[in-house]
Picture 1 (cartoon, helix red, strand yellow):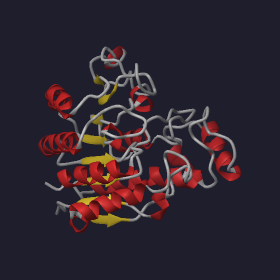
Picture 2 (cartoon, one colour; picture 1 turned 180 degrees about the horizontal axis):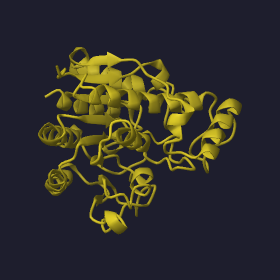
Picture 3 (cartoon, rainbow, N blue to C red; picture 1 turned 30 degrees about the horizontal axis):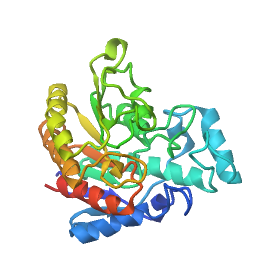
Length: 315
């Protein structure tokens, strides 16, 4: 019998995905989420599961062997950078990054095996990772590996990836831009103003996948009203797809007050998107949706945004 509850994977091994006290992607983001859950009063309404580490072979479903080995070496030495200067090679980062991936896949299995209808992973949604390199604080792309896992293990065909992080999910979008079975809806600050500088509205997929992707580049200082005005267009597109599984990347850096972005959302936009997607999941996906925390560099915003996503998933 289907358990109707929502599950969350959290714990010290997952919290260990960070780049040091002085780095923007620091070690206190996980705790900020837990504190926000307590404040909202929803901690006891969800099932809590332990983090899980994945193996080398799992990473190979998306990443190249050369890149995986590079991360291992950097993790052992703890010196230099894994990219051009954003993502430090901290000691132990390989184990932490494989825990992000493993935890996401564990949650997918729990949902697909009907243990839970929905799941949330706070430290996940590393959407800037490419097959042969990392960027933007994202080592291994758990979003992309999740797509491969759903296809290879669970034989899910039509997967919807929705991304409301302030930064364009380039590592997902461009690695699947010619894939007609991966549908993407990406709301982000216009690339003219913000890293990674991609995600124009006229990019809708290439070749056989043309029309399977939607980008919504938002102007600087876009508000809840701007998001709400555009969401019905995205919602209509999503319903027309009739997806079999929904992945939501809900980066908290779209909220007003993030130190490196300019969007001005409140909790309202996170609630709107999640409630809408959960209703669609109930209609088409047997309720199956997973939400991944993504970015967010203001700890108070993390404590506000992600618990609201969880609350919306409980409805």
